[in-house]
Image (cartoon, rainbow, N blue to C red; front, side, top):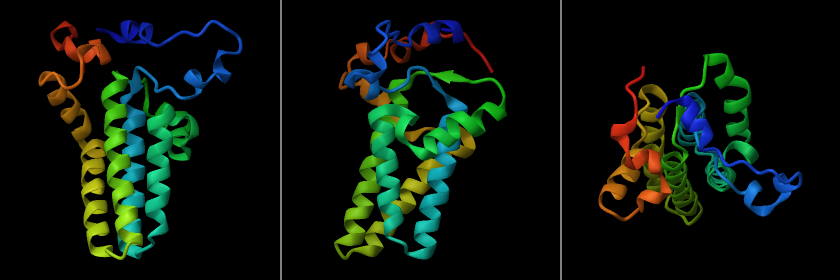
Amino acid sequence: MGTAALLALKPQNSHPLSRYCFGAVFSFPNPVNEKAARVVAAGVVALSVLAIATGWRWLLIVLALGFAARVASGPRFSPLGLLATRVIAPRLGPAKLVPGPPKRFAQAIGLTFSTTAAVLAFAGAPTAAWIVTGALAAAAFLESAFGLCLGCQAFALLMRAGVIPQAVCEECANIWARPVTD
């Protein structure tokens, strides 16, 4: 499926007030610009490493809130997401569009890791918190540097196992229909 076909997947709301409705506000983009996702991942790496290096537990809350915002509505309410989609990614050349559901799933895993790290840090288990944060940083680094999204890989495995229905991401379910591109 090419770029034009992926753009056709984007939901169209024709009502003038639709952007103010709950469903429109709390929706995740589909497709997603892979370049913007990798920039967000670089930001997660930077915040995670900074938190570990300084011991600033409050940064774990910032990370968790950022992931929560991105899970709920994509980059719309995430400062890091907005910076990536509106400032940095457009300067990296044409968008490389990929299906949104696996990226949302990956953001949910990031939310789980960052929330776990924050709870551990404030519950008196800082070593465990920094280990979880390090794992988050490692996964985000793989996404940022190499385009290897571990959450997306888990999404694909869960689809193959039938845990996630194919209807959630038709593009993901039919990988053989995609043309080979750069």
